[in-house]
Length: 507
Image 1: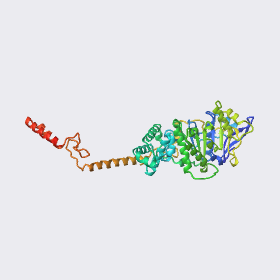
Image 2: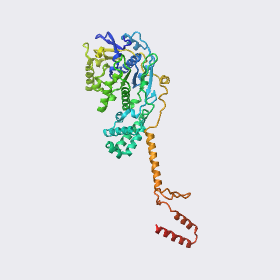
Image 3: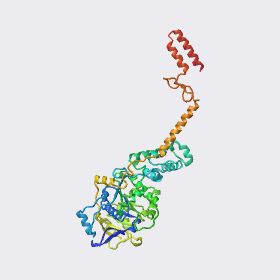
Image 4: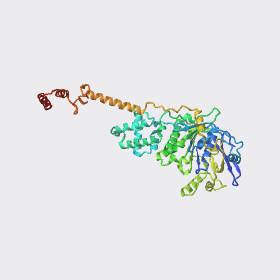
């Protein structure tokens, strides 16, 4: 049975289906990353919940995404249901104790948890280009935009900052093309249109301040348990590219901010990446290389990354090779690709002579998995057919009023609720535009000699250029026409017409 150096996952079975031994994840190898795979409905979420509970009880903070709402139950005390009690007996979990865990709910939209925000600058040109699915030419313009922002001291905090900067770049396209290469207005316009789409999809809620502090994901309670940060992702999954980009940004921030710690007796944080296929789907090579680099190096920061997906083929081979702790639920094998996925999953395990791994993967029951964790010296254990233990917290989602109560009592309550809009690129560029307009108006006034004739009740007599406006009368014409209206005799009108004609010929 697990102790303070390991997490109890379940019990492996002998060929006759009798109890064999407890299967555990050693905490000192918890930062060697992991993989949870299996078809829909085979028990992946429960395995994630069991691991999250184990890490929390060991004092390790956890971050995970709640795709369907089911994972929110980890915040509430479990209940002794018959099938759970039966499973606890089968895996010899005695006593089977129920717990509620310290949970902080997060939500990019601020509806089912505390808002999470990041600034445009923190996201960087690579991830912004990935989020917006930009072409190579458009990505080049995005890189130039970030370069200009750095050189000219323009903070990029939210979408309106980036929109303002792009408008400024379009106005200066010729000047910037000479310095940085071709900057075309059509490319800038295409990026601006994509930003409008992002804004309509709710991405504006994510970009801004106050930005998420990594320290708030690494909290522990007074009794030494790690906080479980649960990201409400059911609405976020409507924009899967935003979901994947956000989690990659978060993983990159952890990598960049945390210090090197080497090998510890337990991780400093465990990060579960659910629906991991979204991270790699149609991703450019430079982004996949970035993920591989982060996964390879982040373990030295004390962070364990666990990918959760349906198919092991969803994970690039170089990343898959770094995932030492494996939980493989059932896979279907109806199509050639599914059959290939089964063979791939089977080949990644250390074989067990008691059964054929590929056959077993297609025959696993719900809540059953092939498990291989790292043993002493970091060597993968022989794969075992394992019954996953029941969770100690509630199985299934919590009610809205329960969620609201937890949010209100959260240690970060009130810290992220109000948006802060300090001076940044939008305000600075607006100010520069106003100053340029004022300077132009002043220059035009000076060019006119400072003389502007006005008559009460009339528009300006002279245009801004100092020349007579084509749709305005001169002072002399206006005065003489006034006399015409006052002269009643035909002689007087003839005299006046003669004067007007001589004035017109003299111009």
